[in-house]
Image (cartoon, rainbow, N blue to C red; front, side):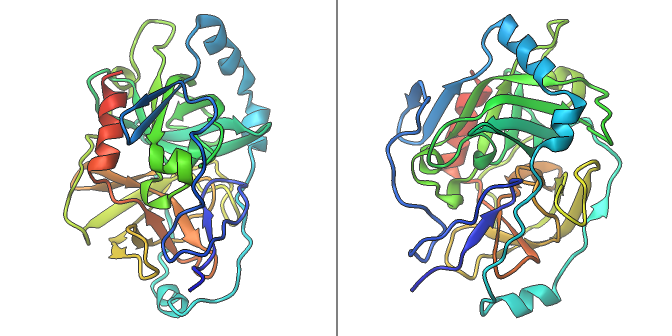
Length: 305
């Protein structure tokens, strides 16, 4: 059976197709640019490791470049049998007051600037941002360059500055095969000019793994495609359900659009998934990967880097 087409919530990426019943892409070789592989599940990439590179990336992200980072791809591919029920459950995203732990992610892939969302996450090194795997790696393919996190972004304001990434981590399942079941990524950020770590400045959400399924979440993000403009934080709250189309992901009724990718799913005050993708036949349901032991092993590597 041909699986329905899906589209990541990352601004601007093309539609993804395939022939399997689960949300994966064809296998490929290890992602170019990955300099260290930790076991079977973790791929790490060195990003801005020098002061000059940090300064270059900070200067790169002008207000104009942030505004021009691509909006979402909104093409659809016809109706699926599950779409009608999902549309009836549409939940409109609600505007939120900016939170210092939540922000926008900016990066470059293939010479094009993109925008995602991310969450400052509690970790041993106090430097971790959690986002979607496709917000830092093509899946399969190259790692992002010019990766930056802007906490509490709001209509161009950067109250906590612009933070650059020293290292990028994702699952080997995402980096090698584009498997949306493992579409999670972690960035280890550089310290600021005063030598302070990210979460010492903005705070953080604790992260949880291997929780029960079917919980109630609040998902946050900066949707950038119409009718949104990417300038403000939004959220959706609801009880998730298993993907009826065969993947291991869970779905949340929400009308957030591209640019919200990587935004955190919070349950009981803990981060436990991220905005990942929507099926092209159903704009009402946003899916996120289950944070199990594989994604936990990637987080552990990032948290102790």
